[in-house]
Image 1 (tube, one colour):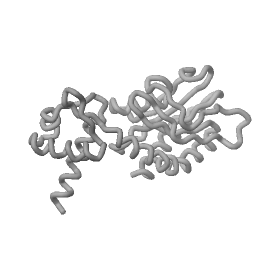
Image 2 (image 1 turned 90 degrees about the vertical axis):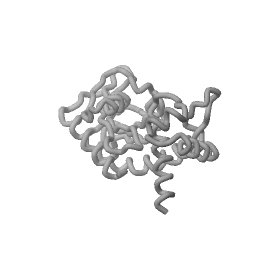
Image 3 (image 1 turned 45 degrees about the horizontal axis):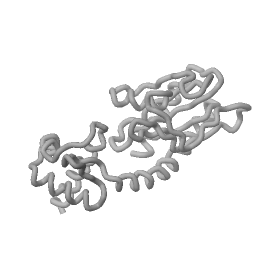
Image 4 (image 1 turned 60 degrees about the horizontal axis):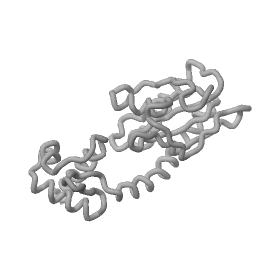
Length: 208
């Protein structure tokens, strides 16, 4: 039992390493970075490759396999269900469209969106919307989290002319890079930023 748990833990560490956005790695590089012997790394790679979670290129470097996409697609509905109560409260509190955005490569993907029920006008932001992480508050909050910043960011007109966005990263979950945010055409009160941070913290607890 202990040996099986250790093997599973090592395999998960290997997958996290391949998911860090720095490209493929040779078995020797993986062995060094994981502090494991090359035979152990080869066995892990073989098992993960057989299940489709790792693929090898012509140079022998390991990359995430397409089997990971199947797991990711299954997780998105779970994330959406967990996020909706928090987003609904946030949207009603600040009178702006609230959303949960997750990182997918260099893009941000909106997996959950809630519009306020009482405003006359709000930004139409659809689930499944995708944009570069470098544009808009949602993506920039994720990039800031990678740099160690957990505060909120404010942007204007980067994704849609006249639209203002506020977003904060969902921190403390090593398996998830995401942000909670709101977007509106109207002015934003000073209280919006702290409320977005509170919503992100609430979601961390819900998903933890």
